[in-house]
Image (tube, rainbow, N blue to C red; front, side):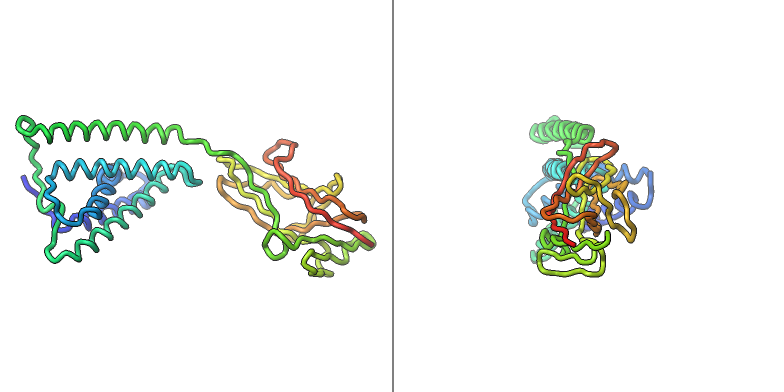
Length: 305
């Protein structure tokens, strides 16, 4: 039995789009399994081969199948390895979108290269669905055995990687920016009268006689590889002080719940409550219920009457 396909690359693109739609809009369907296997084991390698060899290189169906599957396994393994070291990890969505992008890019390049050839050349002009002769073709038999072994080994490797992904370093990023959104121009001079801040001077010379507090932008980024709940406190010379945030005065910020990789960045106000030069303003970051601060930031201010 022989099957003719006019433009197999467009067929691969269409099937990939159908798979994406099935995964996005249909929670569970047999189509996801049927299309998912060639999507991982065949499509990436075939479009890559089509990109590298735009002309027909006298490649029979068995050789083309083996090369496409081998290339697919290599591409999937490399993409999975790369994703394992990113914040997205090896998940259904991340693998789907990365493989789809690879397939669409390589298929587009392959089609462009083919369009430049006067006589159309296709990798598959017709597919012979009959089984190869094992008795008379030692090369095909050996190639198929190697192909099956490669598939088994690679699937086992991918399964192990998914089951036991690399645990990245766990930490929380904690930073402050000045009034221009950069690591400069922080409040340095305060004027305190009758318990109220009447003037704030920043290190770029900016004078604020309205707000009643020194403005900084506080940022937290969760790299703990899991959901984390943070609180922030400010102490000046070892004494806790109030924080201006969101139009109110509070003793601490939080709880601030962040997913892995999520960033929290807000403007807050520092309000000193006593006069003195070279006062140490320490912003403390707490993670969870632990009373020990995970990180701290320090500013120095002068407060005058």
